[in-house]
Amino acid sequence: MSLTEPPQPDATDRSPEPASLAAVFIELADVLVTDFDVIDFLDLLVQRCTRLLGVDAVGVLVSNQQDQLQLIAASTAQATAMEQVQLDSKDGPGPDCYSAGVRIDCPDLRDEPGRWPTFQVVAAKAGYRAVHALPMRLRDQMIGTLNLFSLAPGGLDTGLLHIGQALADISTLGIASQPYLNRQATLTAQLQAALTSRVTIEQAKGIMAERHQLTPDEAFDRLRAFAHDRGLRMSDLARAVVSGDGASADFTVYLQTASQ
Image (cartoon, rainbow, N blue to C red):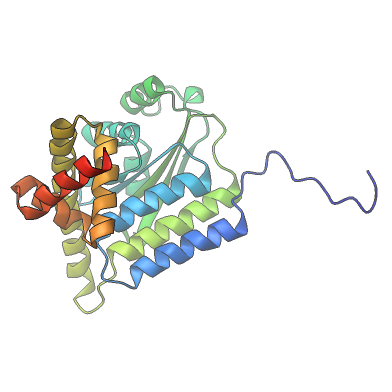
């Protein structure tokens, strides 16, 4: 190779471009300084995690008032299933991370067949081979975990894990960002409100999926697009769909127009 020829990029380098990385952090920071909806914020975060880190699915588990983990955001239906089985069995990378307060890594689930038996059956059926669970911590208090799932074995390198942890830290700040109230009371209230909103959003997805012959993921994408176009919070739109008020009718017209 000529001394003047520029070096070729490493084909194995999976790090995001600096511009892409900066754009995502700016986007998330912009949301944090507005009157944002925590569910919208976390759904945006899991989608950006997937793109930035090159993983195939992402989920967020947070603790409720009874110190029990619950699902609050997931990038795909498969991520939802893998998170839910951990909650049902109280076993898996997410619960381990939450109880220990440290990152849990498994570069290849096939290398540790008995580590989380129930979770591993579900992950294997979906084709997933690697998982990382990153702690979401506010000072010395664990509030949940950011879980990253990959179809390919090998896991993420150190640089990507550092980016992942930074995203987990941002998600923690997003949940606990109401400084004008008692911090502990605020955190508990924020988590509980977010979990309640998640249940309502899941109900709205189901209603719209059945009513308009959509998959749950398609229903969610269209709910999110409508909320963005109308300047609505996702949780407010979901409540409207479940209750059947005017915003729900507007959304039905929106879907009919979009399909023409």
